[in-house]
Image: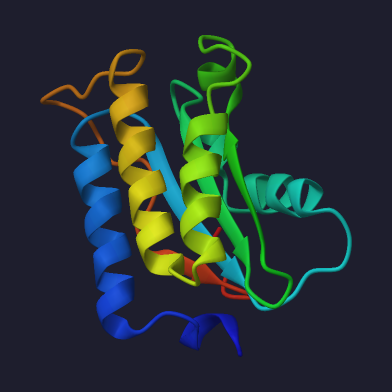
Length: 149
């Protein structure tokens, strides 16, 4: 299955809604990138995508990427330096555990939306939302070669 058709339009809408809801809790920027297949390490690829879509260019360095390779059934959650310098080392473990539980049950959209909302809640204490907050990055889902930036 190709990445752009992995989620239904309704599931994509749910994911986008979760991004908006999470970003209304925090000044953090959340993106989702889905690829059909990767060769190599999922964290290396996610880190490359993170830079490619300029997630490392936010003012507070508080971007979060949710990356999924659908054929490989691999995923990664990566936070920028601003987040990782303020949170404990195991900060992302809970989110990844919840996502993995849903993914094992083939509930990929549900796992992704729950992970996104959990990230928003957890980031809220370190990077609270401000009324004058500017959405620095697009909220849309990027797929395979349609990487924006």
